Image (cartoon, rainbow, N blue to C red; front, side, top):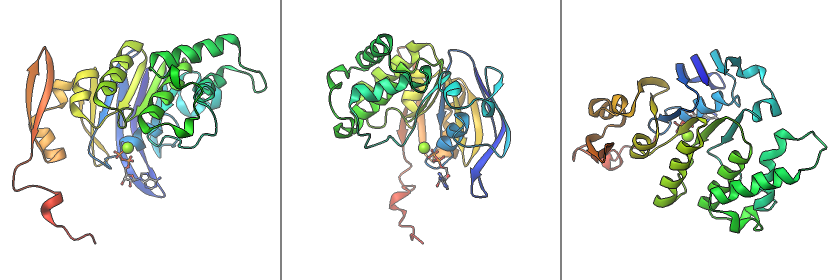
Amino acid sequence: MISASDVSVGYDGQMIVHGAGLHVESGEVLGLIGPNGSGKSTLLKTLYAALRPRTGLITLDGERIGDLRGSALARRMAVVAQETPGDLPVSVAETVLLGRSPHRGALASFTVDDHRTAASALSLLGVRHLADRSYATLSGGEKQRVLMARAIAQQADHLLLDEPTNHLDIRYQHELLDLVGRLGLTTVVVLHDLNLAARYCTKLVLLSEGQIVAAGTPADVLKPDLLNDVYGIHAEPVYAHGCLQLIFSIPSNQHAMAAGKPDH
Ligand code: ADP
Ligand code: MG
């Protein structure tokens, strides 16, 4: 369970997220959505204690997140951040094995069980055949799946993901989010694609200019008027096979990129 109340956070004196509150029940998949620059990554980083909030409180199963340090936090929470490390000078197998580090003493070596856990996480993400490759030589999508395997190998019961599908092709986007749902972990996932969010998240939180402007089920949050206000796009909800999806269109006189705004 993750709870945040009245969280404000920013960089160098500039506040980015203002008074955000959210609650993720055990086993729930909460999607964090919002336009570019709305503060999704900033809020997520605060939830995984990489940023310290200026005000407010974040708890993990009732414990203040700021009181959990290093391995103690990593045993409870796995993270796949937006900026994927590009140049780890290690193999894929070693990269995933690093997910086991929080469970080891500082000088202890990895056990047979650690190797098994890492191998099965690689299999779950369909990247076991890459085990001996150098991580640095992988494609963006392969790296993303390997980092997801590392997070799963960590065996934490909370999972925080920042755009985990942005390098993946359509099939792996769906496979990965379907897997996230089946893991049964308490999950917060930043997603750009509102149709993926509608399909795979139990709950959504919509950020706009650093403020939470809607929270609830996908049907509660993905309302045409609200999406028009926040994204400036027309969205028509359709239901197929019991699932909400959106058909988007841009009013023809409102193309932001074609508006020819001066860049200063
Ligand atoms: P999102 O993930 O929703 O696209 P971010 O949380 O990354 O948005 O960014 C929100 C705002 O904070 C943006 O205006 C961005 O430029 C700014 N920002 C992000 N990271 C930093 C940083 N390290 N230092 C200063 N400003 C930052
Ligand atoms: Mg981001």
